[in-house]
Image (cartoon, rainbow, N blue to C red; front, side):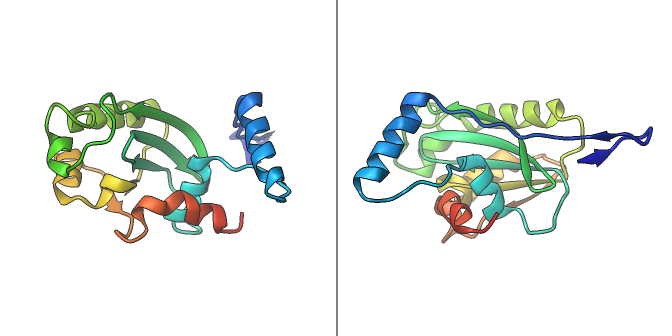
Amino acid sequence: EETTPNGGTKIKLAVAAASKSFVDTQLRMFESAGISIVSFDTESQAIARAVVPEGDDRPHLIINLAKSKASFYIVEKGIVQFSSTLNHADGAPDSSQQVLAAGGLRQVSEVKNKMAEVISFWPVKVQKVLLCGFWSHKNEVVQALMDQSNIEFASAHPETADCAAAIGAALSH
């Protein structure tokens, strides 16, 4: 809940959706293992909990550079406000050199363009870019992606970069 400039209040609500068949499949799988599900969480919100420092309410752009996709999450006041994903056309590359080549992962320029698009779309200035995922600790990828950027950026710790979603899911809400 926020106070508007004219003294009123507005409520912001985050909505996540998944297909019924996906949810039903997940429920059956866990129930067959004797596990009762209380709730589901989104990958984007779990990653936000893992990589945005607690109490840092500034607008952040998280870029999850996974093997098979690049996901972009705008996080403000600890809540994912927007998300978008680029799936890699040719599957997961074998080396960071392929990331910079035309044939493997989507070219860094395409990810960089999407980053600029998301930042320009968001009405509040993004204060920091946080990188996580498989490719986030590969120096040549990070340098190519953040080259000429005037926004502060940081990469998740290399030992946890590829498991941010699991870490965030384990953290309390």
